[in-house]
Image (cartoon, rainbow over all chains, first blue to last red; front, side, top):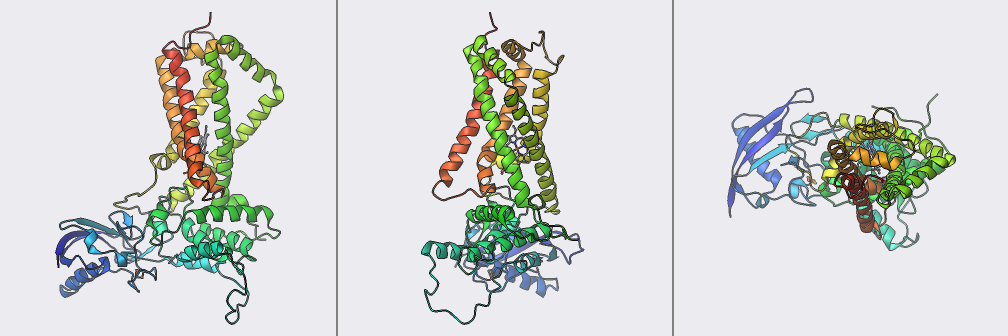
Length: 260
Length: 224
Ligand code: HEM
Ligand code: FES
């Protein structure tokens, strides 16, 4: 089993009001089979043994499905490997002697709670604004009771792969939440159950996205490149299309949401 | 009473207005270039073209009004959106490694405002008396002579060429980005759409660069 040594530059910030700064650490004898988070676990154990405060980072499933983990590693959200969450990133992606810069997601709407942990409740509020179906769904239906074209279900499924990690916001030069919002809209509105409320949903979620203070989309497509689930910017085009259509054709007005 | 949500309240709506006004400007610069290329056909054709435009008052004023509205919309939306986004990341990254974006896309907020100054200068240069910038009399009928006199001055030609490179850069991103902004996307034509838009952007740049340089090197000669 081969091991590597790394120099880490880690963002340390004791709380929301601490200005924070980078601190250097040596990660020694790291197995190339370890995951990035396991590497940080090793560093943290040493810190704890020395009586220092361990590096705080979010994680839960460690298998790439919950969306809790995430940090900007050498300038890329979730690190250098495409379509991979930080917890699934393996140390074999790094070479002995590498320097690794580790920073939290940076966005006004994602304030740092501590070190690499950010508050992503802005995403929850976007969902709460309309990312649901309000009809009672009852007990499970018989299969194929509602016909759904294969293409629509595939597209909805791909959008539903979004784990809400926030890498899209972290990657975007404008800190825009367009890809997240677009995915959460599409996985509902592409299906017959989500279609009836589509016009309200798109207007409510887009205006909540704006109210949270995210930037606008300027089509750099950095979000798609950073997304651990490879969600396509085609959903952003769909969101734009559906929003513009709703603003022009909807028969009811919606109240304007005030900026946070 | 609570206000109703309007198109211009949202980033998506503002960006759509930016895209529509950008599309109008894109169409204009294309027509402007094609029209001006007639300068290669000599003074009679070019001055005839200019007289036709000036003689058609509905066309002239229609274009002026549509363009003015578009320019104002484009700039107001751009400034508002840029202002919003500049606040969206108060603490930046120590290290940021962009994966896929282009130089043209990153520099939109630079090429745009620079184009504004160029447009203001360009309109003044060919319309305001006394701004002819050279040893010649500005004429309101012999547009060909104005054209040739202007670009025999090397720094004027250089300035215009630089401005056209900026326009090419702005449209290299803008000309296809606007379709995505307006939600016009389909896997069947997305790849081609980007290519066609970028070819148009580069054609506009090439045509506009060719004219002043052709004057400078004598390919477009002084009349008579
Ligand atoms: C001949 C003049 C111009 C043309 C043909 C033009 C065209 C365009 C087009 C087609 C877009 C794409 C819109 C989209 O992405 O949806 C765009 C975007 C933009 N334009 Fe212009 N524009 C011109 C002048 C200006 C000026 C004077 C400004 C200065 C304020 C400006 C600032 C911007 C900005 C900031 C964007 C947004 C870039 C982005 O979203 O990444 N443009 N323009
Ligand atoms: S910890 Fe669950 S996705 Fe990484």
